Every structure is written in structure tokens, then in C-alpha cells.
Image (cartoon, rainbow, N blue to C red; front, side, top):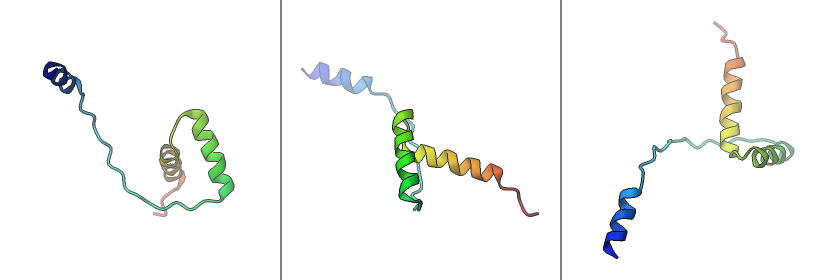
Length: 65
């Protein structure tokens, strides 16, 4: 029995953890419901969609300099 437990511990693979900051995002309920439906269809989390949207927004904004 102890051999089985030892083999299970050896088989575990270390995963790299992504560290995230928590922010408050305010949006209308309609938008949130649409995002949740889309997230389920794409098998993604809302946080992944919001990350993508924020990156796209930052790319589209031109600096004032």
C-alpha cells in the first residue's frame, strides 16, 4: 500500500502558477450575460475574455505624446 502512495506522489507534475491582481470591473448586466454565454460556448473563463479585451483596448489607444 505504501508503494502505491509513493508512486502517486512521484507522478505529480509541478504546474507553473499565474499570479493575478484582482480588479473591479463594472459592466451592464446585459453585457455580462452575453459574455457569460460566449464564455460557456468557447470554454473560456470571464477573466480570460476580460484580459483579452483590456489588451486589445490598450493596443488601440494612441499615446498623446
